[in-house]
Image (cartoon, rainbow, N blue to C red; front, side):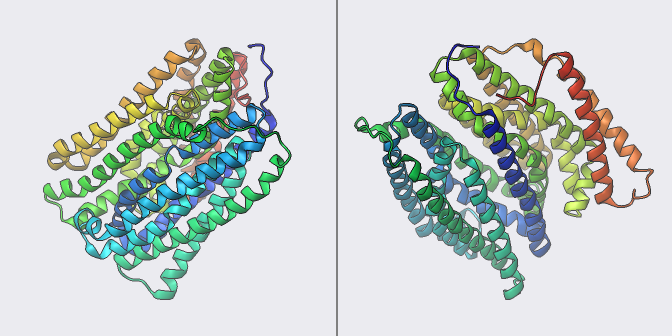
Amino acid sequence: MDNYKYNYNKSLFLKQGAVLTLVSVFLRLTNIFYRSFLSGKMGSEGLGVYQLIFSVFTLSVTLSTSGVSLAVTRLVSKVIAEKNGGSVKIVIKRCLLFSFLLSIFISLILFIFSDFLALYFLKDINLSPCLKILSLGLPFMAMCTSFKGYFLALDKGTVTGIADTLEQILTILLCVIFFNIFSLNSIISGCTAAMAASSLGETVSFIYNYISYRKSLKKFKNKTKTKLPENYVRNGLVHIALPCTLSSAARSLLGTLENLLIPIKLTELGLKRNAALSSYGILQGMAVPIVYFPSSFLSSFAFLLIPKISFDRETNRKKHLSFLTEKALYSALSFSFFFLSLFYICSEEFSLLIYNNAEAGAFIRLLAPLVPLMYLDIVVDNLLKGMDKQFDSMKFNMLDAFLRVALIYLFMGKFGMNAYISIIWFSTVFNAALSLNKLIKVTEIGINNFFPLLILLPSSFLSVRFSSALSSILPFKDNLLLSLIFTTAVSGAGYLFINLLLNKKKGRNNSALL
């Protein structure tokens, strides 16, 4: 490896990664059951409406928060690396002010135009209060994003993990309480309660983040403080946050348009609007969260790699940068192969256990082969951000989103959900190919080291198939929960054993990312 002093704390990295992974798993798992709760209260049509409201709100969130977290991480990391810790507070103050002013502006626009958006985009003026309520929590969400970038730079990512957990728990508890106290029995009242719970949860998250931030400033109290160059923070935000914001905003806008087009195109096919919303809710509100759930185990570590990759790039540690990149890609693929097999073989069991809906299982099975590319894309995007290639990610994401909307507009009105599934397939492959090609160009990856994956893919299928067949002849075969736990545990153990054997043969140690 390159002859540079390496300042990574491997133990701390793994510890933070483990904590953030547990938090991410908890958040996604509770989110799945939260959606199951909402589906039980409002039906799949209500879940579709809930999803549409958040599709419109997502654009506001993107404009207020996207790119800020990365910019704060990079700016704070740079100040600390330059031994100018006394200026950290100034950087954070300016970033928080920027986040607050921008989010207030976006929040006011959302609040003022909520009637227009509800009438012309959500097709129901009665949903306007939902958007108004969400707009109130937007400034708190934006400032939490700045704190997230700050704590990541300080290797204190667990703080934001705790804040996110508090937010999720409070949101779900409040929603359950609202449903029980007010006996909500309509889709509109149910969605309003869910949005109110969400905004209150964001407020609590901000309070916890702010208290933790004030406490953390003590470590910089007696640090060297050198005057920062003029427009230091502004230039950093423009260079780092602006491309991410433009990319995410364009993709979010197109994503919102995509989500609004789907029910419209399904009604053109002859479905009634409630049936169209039901199909949309089953796919996006039920199947997709399950398919993405295991990525929680990867996303936390990939997120923590951003400052590490950035450090390697800044110090010209090319060999170690390639080493980290290769490890991250290999781990993502070997991990995702197992869940590809599990979701493909046990799709119906998952959907019946969680949602008691067989149609969701059919969607899970159709999406399962895309799992490796979906998970890989998460890792690749974070690696590119660490390499200061966020502008390239912007181009790929914008092009991908544009093509999705165009294809939905052209084909969904004729071929329905089958067309949409095909579009998801095309989009996933297309985006992953562009991102991965760019990553390979800027790093030196040893392709030969990925050959064991050719053995791991069939091994994962055999492990899951054998475990599933075994569970079908055991006494608890009629208990979906026990059968799935048995299948997952036994097949996972078998697959892990095969993986370890291959790694040992190749001299690998995939548990050592650093």
